[in-house]
Image 1 (cartoon, rainbow, N blue to C red):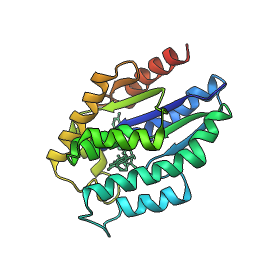
Image 2 (cartoon, protein in one colour):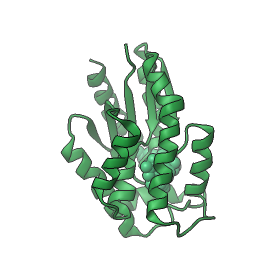
Image 3 (spheres, rainbow, N blue to C red):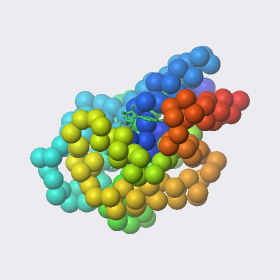
Image 4 (cartoon, protein in one colour):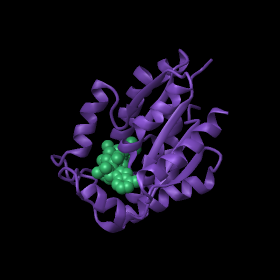
Length: 206
Ligand code: Z5A
């Protein structure tokens, strides 16, 4: 049987990294073989593109270049890693995917969503995540959490307004696709976040 494709999304400091291993353990405890990966990245070429996208060397790159690089990395990722794993029955757990493109390049940068949808169809065909966990929290809390870590990357250096629109973009997707996208209140302490995640995963597995 084909594996399932689960993605985790959220704004800055939402706690994706803090919760991904927890999700992997929940899935493995139920007997699933899990491939953990991330976007942009996940392959040698994808990680090289990630460096171009997140580093400060190309500050000011055109919005369309940013969008196309995201999808170039994604095409490679799907071809080399995600599709082969799903076909052999492995479950794929991915740190960000195309919802991030709608939120960051669409809502954040202002690229028309219909153009992103065309690229999505071209690169992915009919493949969409089976389940997405959206870790949602007020921008100020996320940025404060993220600020306690390493130096900001090119995205983390954006202004507050950018992150507000990214959050709205994500919440709009969740509103449009409530069956697939489950919103987790990520503003509460980690054990409470993980209780919500466990409920969603258990329901999905059932
Ligand atoms: N991007 C895009 O624009 N378009 C696309 O299509 C794709 C991506 C796929 C890289 O993402 C960038 O690429 C991203 C969007 C763009 N922009 N940025 N920035 P990334 O996922 O690699 O980077 P990130 O969003 O900055 O994620 P992160 O750095 O890994 O943050 P996080 O995983 O969400 O948070 P965390 O590291 O788990 O937690 C942050 C801190 O908060 C840490 O100290 C934790 O201990 C703490 N924390 C976590 N949860 C809690 C709770 N519940 N309470 C208290 N403290 C907590």
